[in-house]
Length: 288
Image (tube, rainbow, N blue to C red):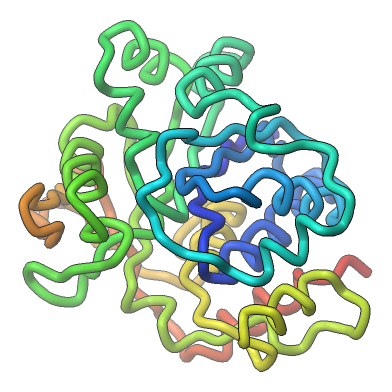
């Protein structure tokens, strides 16, 4: 079974919650093995709200957080409301991101861990700053699936890369030195696909969407990345893949792509209309 570690900002947007529901359901159905989730944007209710949400999804897994990542302003109501539902874990109860990654990687078999990134990149980039940690990553990891970049234009700019000086620098580091193949799903892919708007009454994810002011659904950047990763094959998931080498400018966060059929990076392009992807995601949000 394929092993996943999710890295998420779990921040002010609600598409992370849709993505995590997809991933938890895939874990329960034994399509994948979710080893743990790391949060890369730290707020008061980060861990308690995620603890409540994942347990409501039926999954209890290790959590980590970048305790230093307090420079992302925001006060999302869905986190506060989730955290009011008797959480069992709080920010201080879980390890810092780097220790969290190391624990999970050390326990994993070689070449068995796939990283999923649906947020900022400084935590993953931290693994590249120490030769020992980078060697462990190279030994244990097999792929990185990441929602980041805007690949339909030269020098495209997307939030996960350009948010601040830290994300710009870490995005550049990640593209340059991450040791495994990388699959990018860009801003342009998910912005017009709306999901999460047809959930049943009483579903906690529906309440998250309502609290976010997205009762009718939200853009699907993160759930499309997770669905792609779970499927594991770009063609089967409904995409063409463009191969080459990606780069991020550390000064302004813009991305570029050098085309190369043998490149270790690829970004995806939709083959079908938006309804194809929306239906694929919405159909997996509630376990039958």
